[in-house]
Image (cartoon, rainbow, N blue to C red; front, side, top):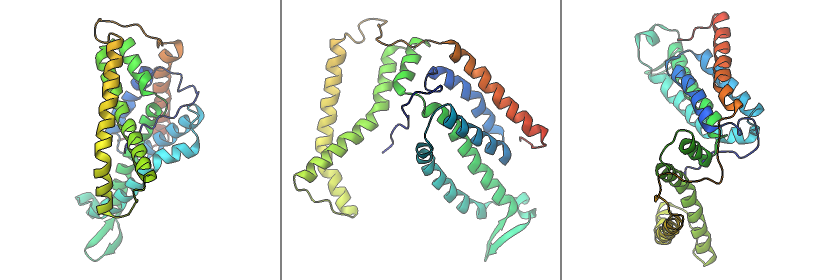
Length: 266
């Protein structure tokens, strides 16, 4: 099941306002949608991984664990996509390998590599936000700084936490069933049977959780007033205001260096 990849620690990136980080990365994501060369994507990837290690204090092992699923997928995409690139450019490029009717040209390899690096560049940029931003802080910032209706913010927070809570509840149910002597067999049929046995207690647990949340909301007069008070308030500090322009400047300098060395961007 999908789980949040937020890594809790104390770092310069973690202390920034979530909205500041979101605003900072948006222009670069738009730029990456139009940049097609391998060098630009590779430079952006290396830059952001170094930023996460240095300023986000993300352990290399945690970073590798987050990147591994996408890297495996991209390797498979690269292997399967390269032979099937059909275009005049690919046909005119040097032939690297041929196996029967399958021909792999240099242009096809470069195009598939550029596509993989573009996806990895997108992901590495968004990791600046996802690895260092707690969803609760993001909702607080949306409600307190951008004045989003707190009812909408609370609904978004519940939806974001639903999958992890569901996974934890399912794990507890399966452990409880195993303690009571339910055998854990292998195979598709056994997996279907385990899912069937876990469905009813899982559904009941989710209903109880929803009922508790509804009672807690009623006890706190949720929705009765247009505004609410907050135990923890987020504010835009000097670092939050300076981060986006400094980030844009750093990206612009790197792109300018790429142009200086004769690397095309598009």
